[in-house]
Amino acid sequence: EASDPGIGNKPVLEVFYFHQVFRNYWLGYSERCHHFVQKFFAISKPGHFFIYVIKFYHGLNSLDMIKKQANYSKSKEVDEIIASMKVVASQSESNFRNKLELLEAEQYGVTGGHIVAVAFHAYNTAIASAQKAKFVHEQGLACEKAGFYCKRMKDNEKSLMYFNQARECYEKWGSTVKVEFIQKELSKLM
Image (cartoon, rainbow, N blue to C red):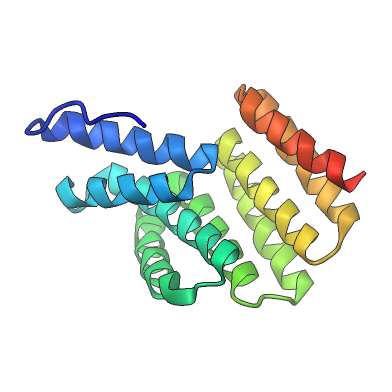
């Protein structure tokens, strides 16, 4: 666990907490991610660009926690995050449209979205938006989330397709950790 870089220096703390949220989310440490989200929000000014990126990861992390624990107490918070992401996506489409669409796809998949065609459309829209914005890591993330949705729906063929796309994105991004993680998921399906 990283220690705080020093109390009293808000700009440094904001950047530190931002990176801890990002790092812990991508490494799959849900509780640590949540911890640093709370620390970030405690010192941040409203309207700051970082806030919306943190909200994106906080929303995904909350949805992941709902999936793991079947605890829907975070659902209202996710609704609020999606509402704020709709506003920021309307103001900065290239930075936030794909994030909003992935949050909506995940929310649909978590809260009983078992109309598979609707879920595929939602995930594919998020994937296309991330690709258009040239956010290869978020394109990979959307593919990964779609792969896990398909796995939960027992559609191994589509799950393999999405996981292969995720692996390609993560290879482009240069994340060996994520490539290895996805490769393990692919091995389980073969």
